[in-house]
Image 1 (cartoon, one colour):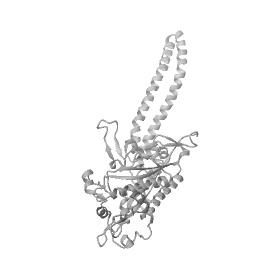
Image 2: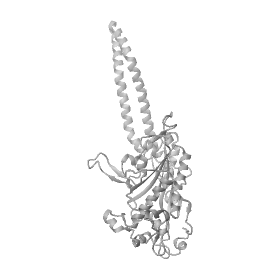
Image 3: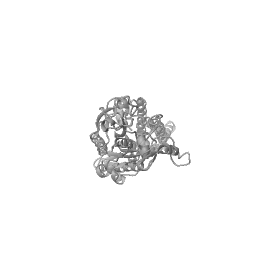
Image 4: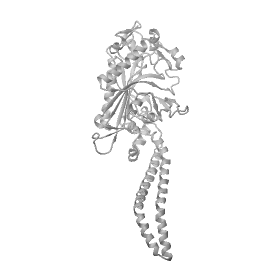
Length: 469
């Protein structure tokens, strides 16, 4: 959620942000409702002050006038009686006027709150302007020794690659037909070494963040209340992507939603808390099952492990002080952690700077990391895929957008500090998402004989084996 004061002070910045992100929001209506609400609140505060003054002064005044009334005659007596009645009626009139103003404020708040949830965070000025993912800009790429993604797999390795679909079939790593039988379209079952390889990459990525980079591991719920989805910015814009469990309709206390990323629960962990500044930054990592409806993805990547409804993900989250330079530094570091991980696994990748139209409502900046997958892309003259990059990671810088929604703050100077609290900043990035990461892992490390070499860091989790097949 944006800072409403910042919108009042600089509405042009937010109008520009909406335009650059391609998000239509009636900011004039937001500002008008906000002005009405503040006007009513100001008047109510004035009347409450008068109410307090009247409560202190009216008693002695009424007593004095009643004393005068005893000896008054004729018109003077009528005037004093009327003045006494007016003084007695004033508290009730003030109370009624205050109640009316509070009713008006309460009538404004739902619409204002709903509109505020739709106002996107303005993208940083150094984010390139664009309409969608086709306008993203490559920052850099990395290839392991002896591999050139521009030349392609066959030119680099000397043989034509199999796709991951061929490899999982030939090596018995997955069963798609039975997965669909069990769960419907876009479901799968990893079998044998396929299941072991997924556990290996998840365990390696988790321990990599904990042991090498000092992140605190958490296990978190994947069923969450709606306020967690709203608080982390996944609702209202992404509601169609979430699985909704209607507990209220079935007699439960509240509905819940299946999360599409561990970020939701990691961020919700400190909702409505005032944190100790000395404890910042907080660095959390989790392994969680994730669920996405893939609404709007009909016909896209329907075969294989790329676009499915259920997957496992290692997610990293950082909560830091409200400082743009610190947020930017953490963004770079979190991307660096993933680059280090991918390089240790020998997976070629590239970094993409997302344009304004591809950021989504909550991000001030986002960098995607895509791994090269030989089995993707348009077919060449021989009918084989040319190879293409596919997104495997997404690193987001959100400043105070999520933390403001979640009411997550810190007090400068620690628990004994003075002054107002400050809204925290937050960042997140994928560490590894499987089974999608298995696609480049299998396709890049395949051998001419149909086997797949297991990268060194994963071998301890695979019983010391060096290859599959």
